[in-house]
Length: 442
Image 1 (cartoon, rainbow, N blue to C red):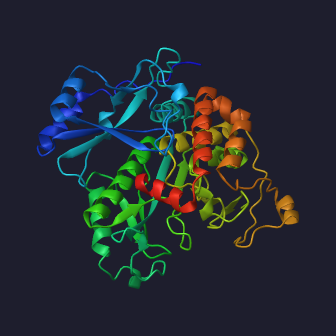
Image 2: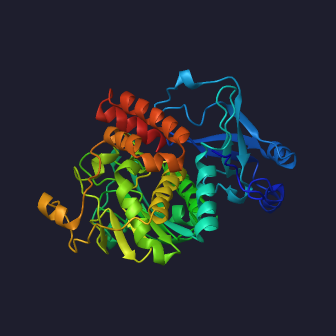
Image 3: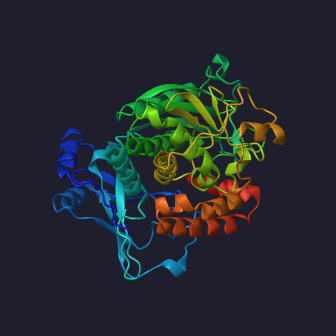
């Protein structure tokens, strides 16, 4: 297995930082950010003088090894995997953005190079490096480009009493009544913050719950789309906090209210191969759930044993076909590491393309609210169901040999280890404890 590394010219151009600081003299701090295998956004904050010094010397910011792949969401560690040595953060200055939600701060997403004396992996297990690599490979081998648009759902709620409570507003989806309230200016501030860094917003609206909203962004290349999603989430959390509220993208903040998704629009440039690509997605979708629905409670927002199928302009399908080569992916939620999830999803589709897998599943051509009976599913070629919890998703991933080989067994083995430990730890907690823990970080 060869070394995966950031492409030349994408990460080290300190002139981008110098120009940025000259244009934004109020910035004093740079947040070096990365997302680990638990899905946690982490940051080291450097002064602008130190960031400039590192950039001019083309040096990295060092962190404990292997912090990328050994931290569990409940703040416990896989201590048996800690090694002597260090990991390195390499800033991708092309991702540099001013944090309009945090005065004096800017953020930059990083490539993580793993060190350690026993098992140094370089960039091979870095989610951001791997997403860049899979997109570059798809372009070089297949002349294939992708675009990804995000539907960013989130709840804003009140916890001033010490207990999370839905805010008082009309909850009818899309209704004018649901935005005629004091919370509209807060959502507008979020949208303006996001747009002010060049992330184009298409629209926003209320969803089916008190305090549930959605912001939809323009499609971007996969790496830039994942970066944008990180910025959107931080904006939602910080602007909410500024107004004395809590913003969360956790999938199930209130038991009796709608869940929170992070639906993704994925389009590809090679329309002659779109059915092969979709076949690869559908075949691996159950295993991929370990990446795109990775929280212990992710499945609570779905119907039990939901069927995996595609359908034209059908919002009840796991894969809503909008047109040839353009799909809405409904299962994804915001506890996913967006770089890992997108890497895995694209890899599964490319497997279908390269192996010329046939699209054997037929469109049921109807909305599916009560499920599909076994006989009909068999006639339509619908063979797979969504996993009912994180554990069967992990088991499916471990059994997906083609996907494991394509993604790199070392990456899969460590990811499975992290998520297995997380599933074990969270299984010992009550629903309220799990919800409180996850909403602190998501």
